[in-house]
Length: 340
Image 1: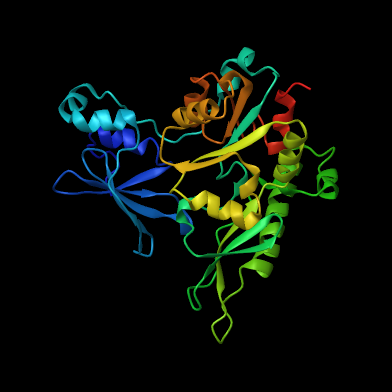
Image 2: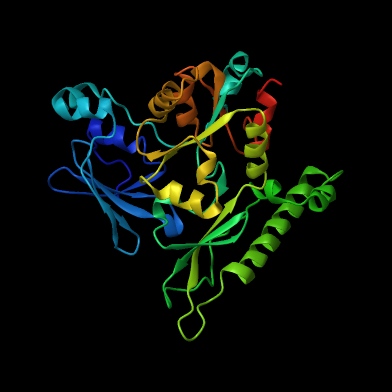
């Protein structure tokens, strides 16, 4: 598998919006196929040399969508002028990486508490945790509880003898109960790391027993993917509603994939706009704020990806990166950046 494929400028620009990717093959006509996502959400995406997404196939080989489209006004421009892009590399690749310093940490003055009228949220790994992305969820959905939705597979689809863990040392603290958090008080760094590792294992074992059982004889449906809403997200939406602050979703995903999951959680009516597409998030943010008459300077955007927060910050919105050691570690902390 090649690690440094020769890509056109338009292909690089398209890959900027695909999330983590790995080169799979280069075709004789200049198309490339890349692997996007991980685990059950892994897909094979074929991209033409003009930067158009031609096909998407799941890891099982099933085609999940087939279309030809330009991703934005810039990409349309790129398709019209391929030779110019090839020479100047006008659209360099921006790989999906989590930089050690966030946009707010780079410019603290831009992230002081302010009057806010709107908060825009990313979806995957921002309001919920799951293997892969919403685009990879194509099966029937079932709500287990307020914070858990599972994707069901067909009878005999497969078993989870070695499931991909939902909880890790890096994210488990956001899911601990008050009693469990109390156990961490006063521990040394090494002791805390050890205990968090054990807690993550324990939570995964409970999840395996409850949600990831093998299909029973007679054709019982099995669980393919578990989607866990971050515990404080519903409370955060309630608090924003009380303050008269609207919310929206801006997610790089197949159109309709995020709204489908939100509907299963019973949250689809909590947002003035749900935009799941492969458009530049900075442009979508600017479009939504303009559409609803909100100044970008009175809006906050939350995402786990530094590239996306950078794009939105260039449109004058406050961009908060969520994750361990970032601007916030759980949704409720967004309230610290809102006056009143």
